[in-house]
Length: 149
Length: 73
Image 1 (cartoon, rainbow over the protein chains, first blue to last red):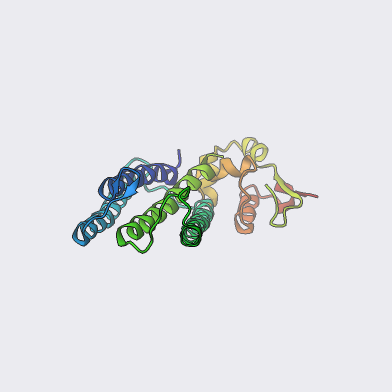
Image 2: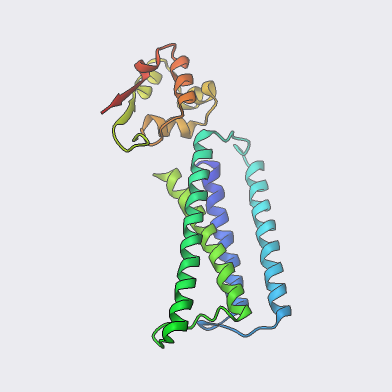
């Protein structure tokens, strides 16, 4: 397995763990809990720190492992660029889904739709961070798929 | 391995030439400055190399470009 593929698998696991932490801190069942600003700030800070620390530790551990100094070549760069593009598409699609959902909810107030109150800061924080996680997960999955196909 | 326009196909004789030269994928990769995985992907025609890499591969075998790569319409 290529080093960047190993890295993508580990980043994927780290992202899933951190998103689970976000969900644990922000969700009450299937709905976003009404939490205090202090709770949100600590959650946000912990996630940012968790991402930096986990990703740096993974990159350092892989660099120190046998074959860790393997050169990155043009195929790695092409895969990285394509994964970046896919991540952008996924984030754009997720934001559009959120906006359309919020508009439909405001226009029709249909009980069939799950409530996504973007005017609520906890909901907005959870939705935006989840969108970023989704994009990151899409990036790692695209990377893994392109190395394995 | 399709071209950017989606028409035609670039094929190569890399595996045959490498085996005839008695080189491993890692050795060929080292000669042209890419990883073994990239040589595997090029041989399997799952990755279209850049023009620069394609020329470096042809030079590694001391062959003209068109003896290594072909374009099929």
